Image 1: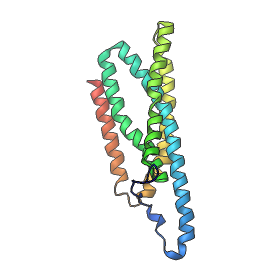
Image 2: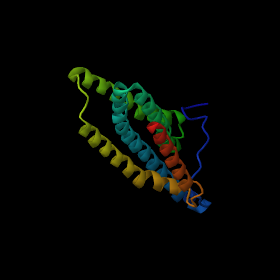
Image 3: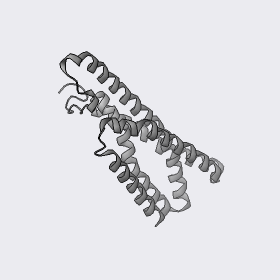
Image 4: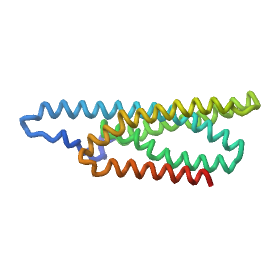
Length: 190
């Protein structure tokens, strides 16, 4: 095939997009607007996840220094939840551009801040010989949690319901995602 996403199947359109021939110009404008909104959401999510991943990399590094078993457990838990994070970035980009490569690259870029966070942790500890103040961790994780919650409430859930207006999958998927996170946290406590 041709371009980066030429082999990709065309994504399904939201239910609100189904229009008759006389509505074609309006439907076309609506489809372009929807794709632009999806792309914006994907990019905003990528930025927020990149910011969110930075302290995770830092925490994993410092946790590993404190106790290698904690570091491994933390890395596994973070790795498990990085899968849906990557999907939250890649899917809107894919559906807005029809390019698997662009979706993959944006998801990859959003995840690269995690090793950068670990490197910064190493540099701080190497230069100071001291662990970071726990208050700094609290502030960083609190800010990041607030950012992620606002993105979920304002962008991810409304977009999910737009593409699943009868709620066949969204609510059960949210509950499943929460269960996966709860299980990963339980494994972290073992």
